[in-house]
Image (cartoon, rainbow, N blue to C red; front, side, top):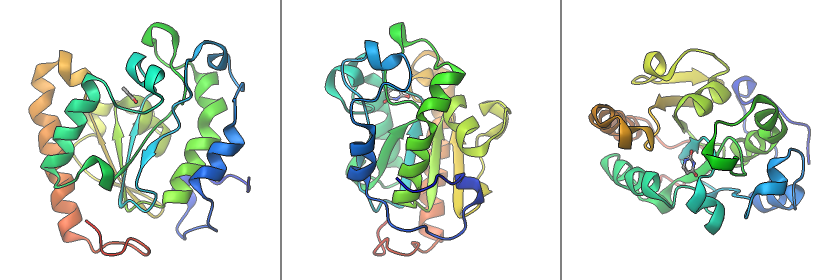
Length: 208
Ligand code: URA
């Protein structure tokens, strides 16, 4: 695998790295102890040429069992949020900061995030999206390299190198904090407006 770059420092699309090559490098990853407790490694799914990449936190129970991100209740919410932006699940690419489920859905540990980081960086470089939507604190901290909370970060676009970044609440959190749901919906409508206003980047085939 080529040398890793920090996405925030990239302005030009790097040499092509295919997602299946990144997945092959991960193999039966044991870079952190979650390799011992997972059922399936949840690599990511979706359109390799997507304009929009969605980054979540890490797999939950259903994702661990099925090997696919956002297939549980949070995933249903994500699908309906995407539709507010004029997007279908298959239009976007969906990945997570960590690829293996933490026991009992606890928060990812810093050393687990560090071990997994090169793979998400490579996925971002491979997809080279126009927009990265960060769901929750862990994704926003990873992509924007800040410790600021999601409540202050959300609701506006941030630019980091090539990428426009839209941080917002995690759709699972909005299932408990019902008052966050309309805010999340506003953020996804804002995403739809941004896509309509900005021409698709190179290799995006004019797709929405
Ligand atoms: N929550 C996440 O952050 N990612 C998933 O894949 C599922 C739930």
